[in-house]
Image (cartoon, rainbow over all chains, first blue to last red):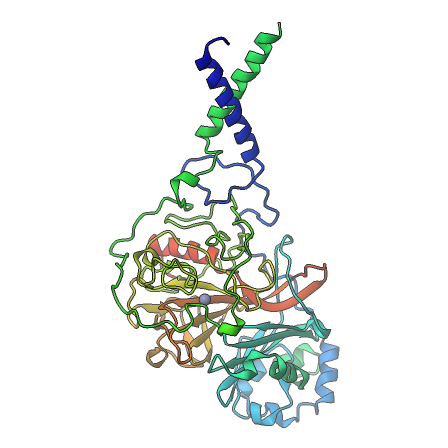
Length: 220
Length: 304
Ligand SMILES: [Zn+2]
């Protein structure tokens, strides 16, 4: 202990050890991994092991009674709104298809059906509208939290996208979307949620093709 | 009798310190950027400064209007998740954004496990805004063609500071996808390909939407391709790996940097920050899926 070299080494060692101990609890603010280097235990509340996404949970749980009520309310399938959609794609869709009561918009609309999911595209001047319906959703990891400033009735959430506004909501147990995409980034229709809100508000027309009618117990 | 005891304790501390040092407990700040895997250089990939176009970039890569932009990110510390991503090439872990560019999303779920890498050739995932030539990029590197943008390691930029909604990001806003630069800083040259089998369900002035045929019917959005030279039209059925168009800088009139903005969207069920269960259609972090897809590509595996 009298040897100043040894004393110096001990002081340096103690200091280094203290730094090492503190490094175990404080995440370093720099990129971290070095090949072959052990890592400090850091607190990471939302990090889990590498996982595959969970499989979509359970059967769709579609509220067919509610959907049939919506179908009746909107004219029992006789609404002019969905008449121009490809009947084969409509028949293939095992979901209540939800459309805005806007014959002008829906006049030239195209439907792409995957059976348990559909996507409809319609043109506006300088913009386009997409409408989708999905039976299934993928569960997020339990540690994930969604920061949503405003959740409206029917779980209505509106998100500003790069080129427009994306609304999603749940009705009849189906996750629906109504999205507006503008040709010009500065188009005022895409800068506020007014248009997409009105689109959701007038989405009242239910259309059911063969597969959906069968699933709803209406017979094809 | 106390002196030997103190000596023993001190010896123990020295041993601890040495072990700690060798184990890298003191961080790797001095060694500079340290991606998950030591960066190997792709053959012929890096492109020197001034390699190609340096036309004015309207938005600095922000992909949004100036008055909606949130250029300066929150200044909270960069997270350093310690679960290494899979990967045989140089890349920072998912969620580790460039310093002061926002807080990354740390969950490591590979949201599209069979993703087909959306470029036919090599490509570089990194930040358009905070990288060289970007609106918030280093002042001494004004060129988007700077070699640093066209070399490894990759960098996640999902949740990077933006005014757009992105509910999985810390404050509910942030970059909704991953920006990827093509193999070289030359527009209209490098093929962008389909990420899954599906249908082109929408085509805008600078966006292409691919809806996957298989559940859960992920929606892939490709931005900034050369729109008047696309290989596909709305309604086209495509196979994973099929050419869609060439990477470019189309952005509704004003050019952006040469890159492809890549989004994965899906219907999800989760919990809001105030504890409410909610279902919505939203943006999922693509980085982990892209890393795995690029690994498969590098291993010579075709797209499923
Ligand atoms: Zn982007």
